[in-house]
Image (cartoon, rainbow, N blue to C red; front, side, top):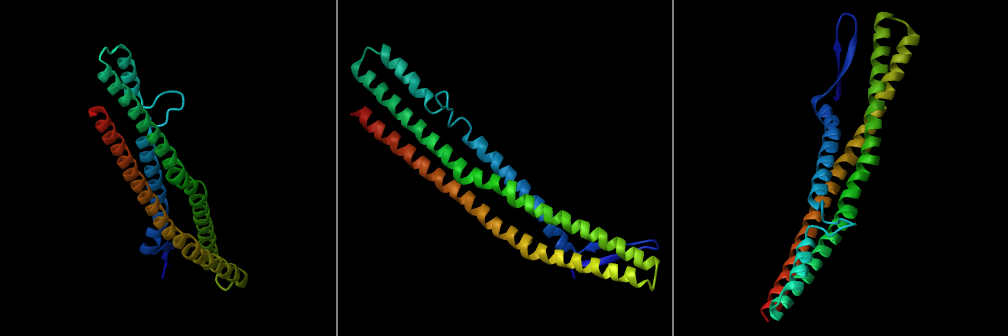
Length: 214
């Protein structure tokens, strides 16, 4: 049973089972976790894609270019020119990575908050309204025994509340569990993108070192 009644002399209230209550809490817990994930990803890519200026990976390349201009040794000047190009390429890789993280990770999670979470909370609000209506009808019926109209009203309120609990199980909680899998796949996607970025950056640096030594 997902509900029971808490009785007092004056009224009775609906109390959900611990299992059902935990499922309800999971909705807001998922919202908080998703918001925290978004915050962490936005912090991670901060400064990678400054549209109007060099990002923090391209700035060392600008210093290399400036130094190359005053460098008197031809080999050293060529080395600084190579490093400038490498830092520029690394900067572009981070810009692409930043955009990809936004499009493939952050945007889907923000969309979940904007749409799916909002729909789930609307169903929870409806459930609370129907529970209150059922409790009110129950109390009215208790205070006026043998009143067929109030008994009918109570029965209808119970039916509406029970139907909404079915909606919660089939459309909300089931969807939430599916969304947890999607959110896990998003985080895995980010980690795969991160690995690819680091590998490309390493390739750039290794190639540059070989060219500079040559």
